[in-house]
Image (cartoon, rainbow, N blue to C red; front, side, top):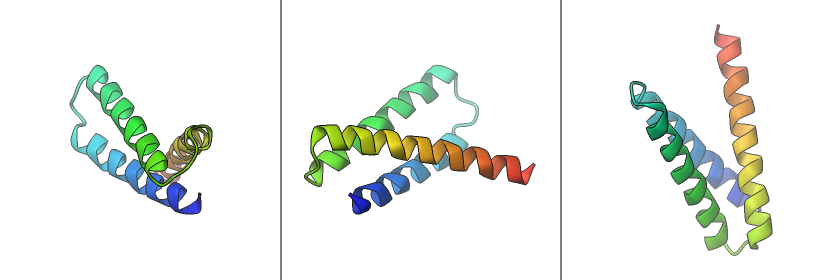
Length: 78
């Protein structure tokens, strides 16, 4: 479970980089990108033999941690 969490955090870091690179895209494309990354994170957890319920909760937890840390980071810089 810990390995899944760390790998998903790496996926969300990649999402942050790609979102930064596509700063001028429309909101719909960013939402589609977000959905794709959720799906990739979920599939990664399933691939590492985690149950579907635990994979879903782990994915939601990593999304929450990612957005909280991102908010704290940007509020600290400004």
